[in-house]
Image 1 (cartoon, rainbow, N blue to C red):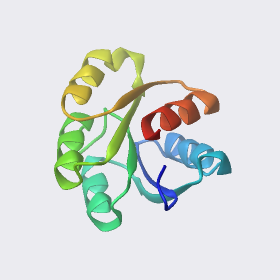
Image 2: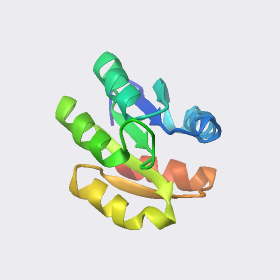
Image 3: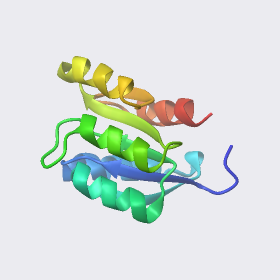
Amino acid sequence: MHAHPLRIMIVDDSNIIRSRIARIVGDTRLGAQIVGLARNGAEAVTLCEQHQPDVATLDLTMPEMDGIACVKELTRLKPDILVLVVSALSDKATALQAIKNGAHGFLYKPFTDEHLLDALRELTE
């Protein structure tokens, strides 16, 4: 486990989803710190450079830079970043593409709080 709190960046074009993930992640059981909230891949890249997160939750369908391009860019900037793709079931092919490009896990929307926490725990253990 990390010596410092897990630094998490949340990337989703939906304000509701960003807030929900932030609320769940803020749950003390994970001992995580939210270091960035991005509305799209371009913002995510900037935040990644500034805050060096350990983990990113990433939506695939976003304006400006989609999830695939974003995964490539994040893993290029920070090779040890753990990326959890959080996306709708209909994006399954895209999700597999994201995993080929460096994402580490996948969580389908809609998800429960427990699903998200389990996915993040799995990723970081």
